[in-house]
Length: 410
Ligand SMILES: Cc1cc2nc3c(=O)[nH]c(=O)nc-3n(C[C@H](O)[C@H](O)[C@H](O)COP(=O)(O)OP(=O)(O)OC[C@H]3O[C@@H](n4cnc5c(N)ncnc54)[C@H](O)[C@@H]3O)c2cc1C
Image (cartoon, rainbow, N blue to C red; front, side, top):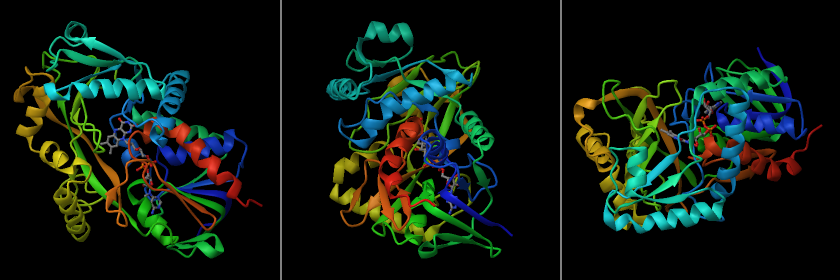
């Protein structure tokens, strides 16, 4: 039976939790850190199942938390990966308008990127074709982001976990059934053991709202899960884009649209995706695994209301993205970027992730930015959506700027 005590207990060993442990050490806030995860090994959820793109910071409204942490966080993570010799594909990214009326969005993205401190260039069709000969732009223009890169997320997680272990951080894994006793500043484990803490940080990703509720925090917030399936170009396919190729996104919805991403392998595998379809469970990665019918029904009701009210242009998301899990529609979306892609070039990837999107029942809106709530001796990171992987070192610093002064450590 575990009876453990620490200054800071981090719940959730994804990229956000690991980076918080790292920055607690770097900033010398404490060395008594424990990381608790419900899974037997790290990387089973979003941080181990994402596209691995280190975003350059073009999409986010200047002044938002995302904008603030993405550029700096991305640079730090890229340098960290390079210093350790981990796989990194410095291939850049090009964004194209699939329809002529979306051309103006390139200027919006260029302005946002520049305001956020990212490097961007507006390109003509010739420049686009020099990079990806088969790519198409409907308006003759494209936006080039040279600093977008791709990593192998699992390799990053493994390396960071090992470094934290070497520096004395304790990991308690495979503990899913625990109850919170916030007034006593402790968790009670299923076998009767306890973990006592000075301060708790909740970074439980897809379950972060449920964990927050155990501490009496954020009852007006619920996470809506969206499944992200990936396809990939077969090795035999003659088209192999050597940079990320994205459509101009609808900046009102939290998904970037189906895109081509070359992996950070020595011979890159080009994935196409992820889709963004309402999921039947927060961890329903395959078939009937971890189905939550009641949750799915409640979420579909919320989404139907969003559709009717068309908040934030939600109808456009439904029309353009909600059904992309259907292969013919995914192929159509891919052909808007590369018209010569054919069904026989594609195969389903093993990779699948689920994105958590926070819904605020008080305002009836999807939350667009990162959100951090405070509780008794606790901090709750509720909306660590993309680009939280990219931004994780800088996001951890921002969370600690607020939380560290509240930490009443012995
Ligand atoms: C398909 C997809 C593609 C994406 N692409 C990108 C990208 O290219 N670039 C980018 O920057 N971001 C991307 N993202 C977003 C990025 O992956 C996430 O923002 C980031 O990984 C969130 O990290 P996290 O630590 O908050 O959550 P997670 O990685 O989900 O970690 C949460 C951890 O909490 C644990 N946990 C949950 N409940 C409990 C509990 N009760 N007790 C103990 N432990 C618990 C889980 O086991 C898990 O290990 C993508 C996400 C998805 C799903």
